[in-house]
Length: 35
Image 1 (cartoon, helix red, strand yellow):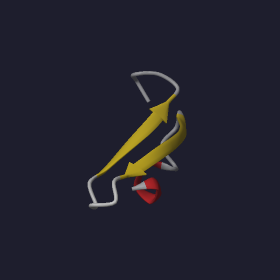
Image 2 (tube, one colour):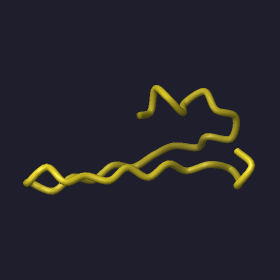
Image 3 (cartoon, rainbow, N blue to C red):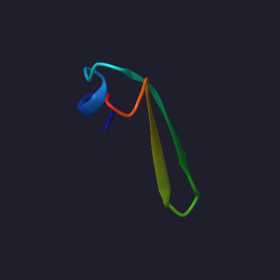
C-alpha cells in the first residue's frame, strides 16, 4: 500500500498492525484532507 501513496503530496507516513490470525489494518497519515 505504501507504494501507492508514498508519492502523493501531503503523505506523512503510515502504521500497520496485524493480529496473529492475520487480520490487519493500515492507517495512512496525510497533511490535510485535501492531500
